[in-house]
Amino acid sequence: MHRTIRSFTYTICTGVLALSFLASSSAQTMRPDAEKQLAHDIYKEFIEIQSGFTTGATTPVAQAAAARLRAAGFPDSDIFVGGAISKKSNLVVRYHGTGARKPLLLLAHIDVVEAKREDWSMDPFQLTEKDGFFYGRGTGDDKAQAAVWIANLIQYKKEGFKPDRDIIVALTADEEGGGPFNGVDWLIKNHRELIDAEFALNEGGWGESQDGKKLSNDLQISEKYVLNFRFEVRNKGGHSSLPVADNAIYHLAFALAQLSEFGFPLKTNEVTTAYFQQMSKIETGAVKDDLAKAAAGSQEAMQKVAAASTAWNATLRTTCVATQLEGGHAMNALPQLAAANVNCRVLPEDSAEYVLATLKKVVADEQVSITSTLELTAGPASPMRPDVLAAVTSTTQNLWPGVQTVPIMVMGATDGRYLRAAGIPTYGVQGFFFDRNDIRFHGRDERMAVQSFYEGQLFLYDLVKILSQPAK
Image 1 (cartoon, rainbow, N blue to C red):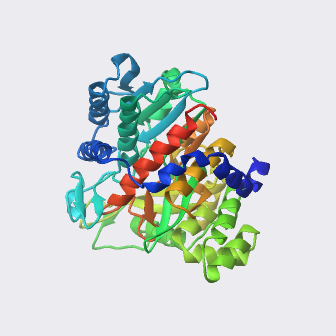
Image 2: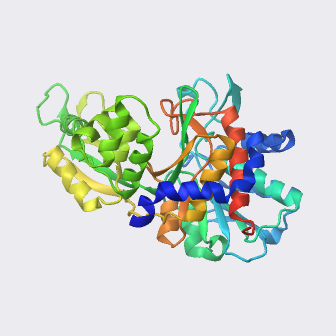
């Protein structure tokens, strides 16, 4: 791992030459209209099925995908629909190759973060095309990739493509919530044979753009992991006409205020060092030098880089943030309970014990109980495979000449963690570009540029073909 990270630039350069046979793709940035229409129709169908983590179900999405595949000629023997409970089904489909190499797994999750109509300027569960964007919950995270995997697989079958390995598509449940019905975890434990592969492609890497200019096509090879903590204060309460300083809400509010002013230490690892080195060659202005110095370990430069971008800040440190509140039982009573969920995205090298001990030190209030509610362990980074790097780089250059492929540690977390822990290296790559200053995943009016959706369809179509056809 150490050596391949350091030889990243050389591997990319040689990969571009080795895969120059795809140069014909540079003349187009989208698939033919009929294929675009199919991808759009599947995208719309998926978006308009409410598959929110708590209020929706993934089973209708899995069933809709299965129906599309059957209509395209995939036999029932190659299609699996099932999951931990009836509402949380996954879809796994296999497109058979020659078997010369182990399968390639194409992963996307089909659950979404909850969205309330009153919070949005439009219905979050309708695909709305407006001003050059597709709006709707899951347009970016992650139903675009799910729709493209299915549409492209149908196209491979239609054109009679003969890969030298099986291509497996898995559309899975409960990535957003983590458990207890997470589809990837369930498939590994109950049907490993359905998804066993040499490596996987997943979400977690996307294209970065700014002011309409494409900057980089990021390739995710590692990720943070998730910890959730409950901050809780219990009190005897009383009548609101007799207030006291020992108030559960005040204790909690002070603890969260302390947290809001705290930052975990800034640091880099092998993957983020490589990322900042590459970005220093892409960015302009004063930040260019700061990125290079941050990659070299300068704490002063890291401070500047963290201040310049919320994404860079999250790349450089473990973060913890309050996400939910509860408290009080009556308008005219002192609260007997005040609590908050604190969501932490943890660097792979930081332990859960370290994070908990740090939070207790920051809060410094014995009245505030801090307990873990959802604890996921860190997963290993994927090896920097030359074939994957070369394929992503070549495809990127053919579609968007001059746009660099950059290795990243994703600031959030994905289902790649389960696969890596199970011995299936996983790489986050999509070819969908988002403005780095307007990332709306999990937020209000989530959207994907129309052009980016169709360009990503072509990117993933070409990428999978490179990775699953006989070497020349």
